[in-house]
Length: 52
Image (cartoon, rainbow, N blue to C red; front, side, top):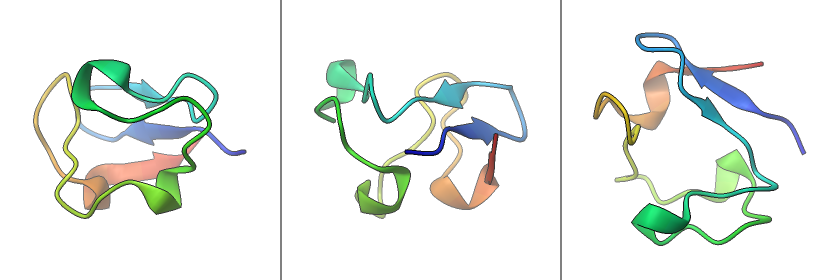
């Protein structure tokens, strides 16, 4: 699974790790994140991420 990086702050979403602090289980591909998921570091939406 491909990692994605927030263009604004550099946070890297790693599907293998997920985002457990925000209810995203490990193994969740970026494409399957809820539409209202936001960067846990800066709060921007999925549309601000690019493939790593």
